Amino acid sequence: MDETRRAYRNDTPCGDRPARTYKHYVISPDPGDAVSLDGLRDLAVAWARDNFPDYEVAIVYHDDNASRIPHAHVIVNNTNLATERRLQNPDPRALKHNLQTLAKGRGLSDLDTRERERFGGRASHRGRCSVYRAQPTATEG
Image 1 (cartoon, helix red, strand yellow):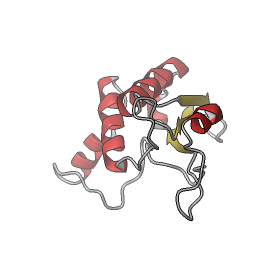
Image 2: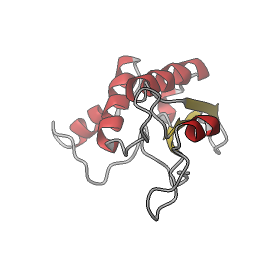
Image 3: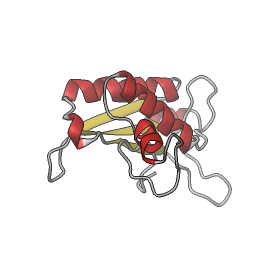
Image 4: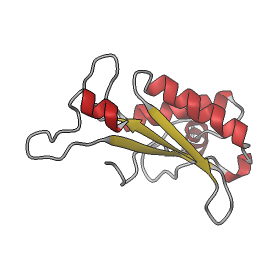
């Protein structure tokens, strides 16, 4: 990934801001789903292909939390291989909804359905808890 950024000169600062070298996302399933490693891998790879088809992506799976719930860390390089441009901030809501759709299609819990049930048929975007988090963590480079 470092070599790709250097080759396309996307490792240099943009104005007075340092270069963002990657985006980091966490996909964390509902503990009640008891998702297998293969199931999590299928979900994470499908999500990355849907949302970042022209980027280098690294995915790491582990269960380092107290409840041993498997989750995936998805790292997206900042360089679009088709356009050679830097990654722009994707719409977090669109990323989340895509992940929810993929989860539901695999028989896993999805936050969209839970929100509609909780709020009488309409989804609320206030005070929600993440069943799957497809949002950047604080560790962007």
